[in-house]
Amino acid sequence: MAIQYKTRAFVFKKSDRNESDQTFSVFTDDFGKLNIFAKAIRKSTSKLRKDFDLFYLSEIEFIQGKSVKTLTDAVKIKKFDEIVLNRQKLSVANQIADTLDDFIKGQERDDNIFNLVEGCFNKLDDKSSSIKNYQLAFQYFFWNFISLRGYKIEVNSCAVCKKKLDPYNIYFSCREGGIICKNCLAVDKSARKINSDAAKILRLIFKKDWQTIIKLKVELLSENILKEILQDAVHAFCPVHC
Image (cartoon, rainbow, N blue to C red; front, side, top):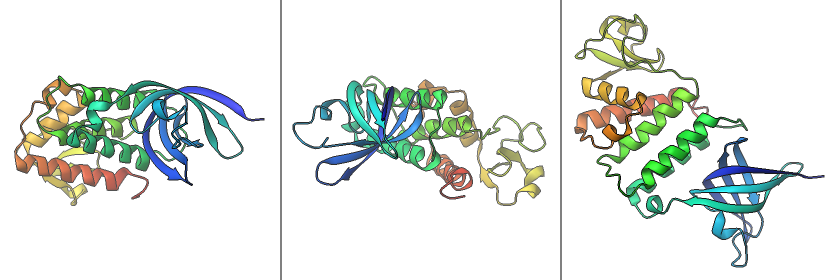
């Protein structure tokens, strides 16, 4: 007999199946990441269409079959309209979705990640929130997500020797777990040179200072450094690349 479950679910991926079915990737507060099959949801007569779609937060019910979880009911909690209608916000949302898809491979409950995802989408969806640099919005999500996944990043002192950092001679090392000083560069010669502005932004991110981050105007050099160390972290920590 199939068992029925009920939970809140954030929809972050979907794909078409057959002529009228779809499969959704969701992150739930009770079960973590799940793949949910929705039969005939693409039909105009489907009762599920209005309450369950990409970038919706919904309360759902599903049954667990032998190998497939099938959606049986959905009630929309929130549709993130402002994100869907804004190209830059949508780009950030898709980056968040890709991160969830790449980094989380099994069913694993994590209330903190659920709260981080919900919080970031609520912040992006806020019409009154003026974001000057949308890439920083994704940086905010990514580094806090990595931290919740167990990768503790040191940004306040040298990750190796624990000494105070010289802002003019600092490097970022994924291997050593954060910013390192010039004296410790020998332990990871692949560490990337960064500047003090990039280090300050990382500190704001780990303080979860969203209001300051979204108002920042970042110089191109610092923006490129942040992009590069984020990509280094993706290749170092993501199961897809490991």
